[in-house]
Image 1 (cartoon, rainbow, N blue to C red):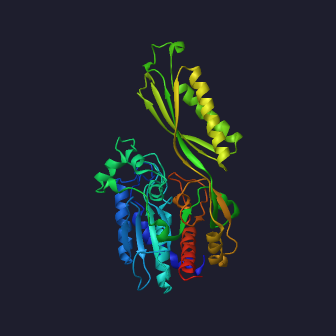
Image 2: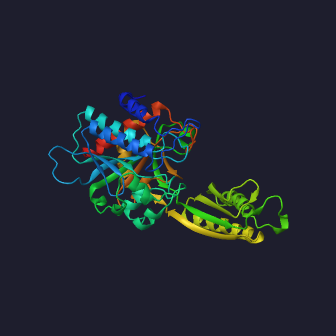
Image 3: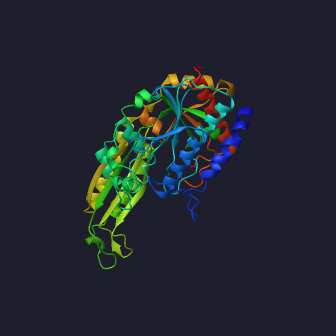
Amino acid sequence: MSAESDSAAPIFDPLWAEIEAVGRHADTGGYRRFAWSDADLTLREWFRGCAAARSMDVEEDRNGNLWAWWLPRNWVGDPKGAFVTGSHLDSVPDGGAYDGPLGIVSAFTAVDLLRARAVEPSIPVAVVAFSDEEGARFGVACIGSQLSTGVLAPERALGLRGGDGITLAEALIRAGRDPESLGPDLTLTERVGVFVELHIEQGRALDLVDRPLAMASAIWPHGRWEFDFTGEANHAGATRLVDRRDPMLPFAATVHAARAEAAVHEAVATFGKVLVSPNGTNAIPSRVRAWLDARAADQSTLDALVESIARAARVQAGAEGVELAVQTESITPVVDFPPEPRARLAAALAHLGDIPVIPTQAGHDAGILSDRVPTAMLFVRNPTGVSHSPSEFAESSDCHIGAAALADVMAAWVTGG
């Protein structure tokens, strides 16, 4: 461990400990930090406390994203051209501790490290926590950054409904927010000079080459699709097999088809969320709603993959007398991170040697923002590659290296280095 990562430890570790128990489920050990839930609101207050302890002004923008500002001395007017870093605080159901919060704890650690070095920024610095990155509650990922960039229309966002039956509009009202405020952030391109997101690696590329840190080259295109199979409810014991219109059968066949087609296309496809009606042990279902998550190295491959899965589903549904509707929920195109910010990151981290450059199959707020502002990403090693699970893990020493590296990048950027 370097001297800088040693100095990160006494800052990083207490911050990490402050949130370690928030939203953690006693039985699974996983985190349930869903957008606008009590756990999310607790973390938002923690973020405000971190900012206040550093005399950073906090702003909650119109879309619920939190910004903590460190302005240069004698700065007059609104922030412009800022170095922005951070990530998100929410989680998937029973997710891991590191996905999102690692980037925010590292960001506040980096601010402290710069101040300990007596670095005076020449441009504004912001730590940001984007709202509802995972989309676990309302089904659409990166809601906060998508709204801010104008990718997601406020009307659609407000009508999104979670599994608890509550819409985003209702959740915002319950949290004391004004749902009518949602919309594009017209100041985004002026305020943000660059956004650098530090994140745990969601894969094992770094473990396989025994390196603690990497930079992102690209994000695979990905999306979510709802498959709605509608059949006929009936008695599980009294209904002859030949008389059944069971939507579970074509759904099950579609799951197998998705796995097979993903292998053919050298991509990934997952049905991870399923709702069955009426969901009775002794009842043939009337309806199965399932959500496909699909990702591929390029858009044409992704399109071909989803079409092949939908085609297989239609064939299976037809054979069982079941109706099928396929609806696109969201599509995020490929993101190629621009070379100029990446070159500046590499220069700032030259003392660490060659930093691996890897693509990621996971979506991030940095990818959403990339159409509007310069973006870059740093990854911290995940020794098992497990993510979106209670088993997600990073060594403390690697987290310290990541936070110290983020501080080096921040220092170089805000001093013109």
